[in-house]
Amino acid sequence: MSGKFWIGAIYLKDEGGYEIIIKSLKHYRNRLKTIGNSPELKDAAAMFSSVLNQQAMKTIPIIDETIQKIQNNLSDIQSITKLKEGIPFLEKALSCYETDIKKAQDTGHEYFVKLVGNMVEARDDLNTIKIALRKIKQFE
Image 1 (cartoon, rainbow, N blue to C red):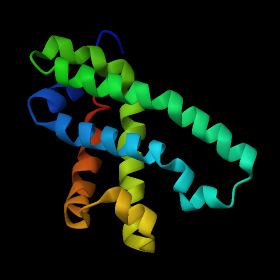
Image 2 (tube, helix red, strand yellow):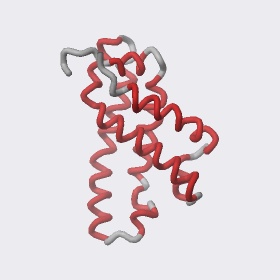
Image 3 (cartoon, rainbow, N blue to C red):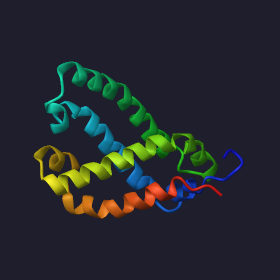
Image 4 (tube, helix red, strand yellow):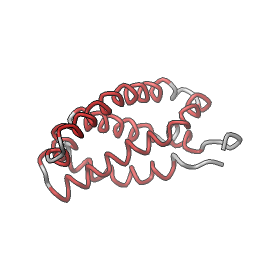
């Protein structure tokens, strides 16, 4: 894989893919910050909930660092290719946003609706997320 060029870099830089990825990372950060209010955890044992909260707090700085790296490296394609090691993390953020949009649509639960925000915009983001998930994995 190291000898191949990461096509996802072109998607991020030249095709504007960075926008949905940054949006997904910010959503992921908000999700982690409010994880204690998540309906999925309301019924969880107190110990399990505290472990998840601790893990979430460790992940938030990584999200902030990743957003900063993307923003700082958009100037040239060589810089952006350095982000390819973070593909699994980017996928996680995109998938989290996608899942929460679907939960907001399907359940209408206040937590997910508030977390997602503008549902019209979020519905439009679903297709963009699918494209991003496909393109960030491409190598040539």
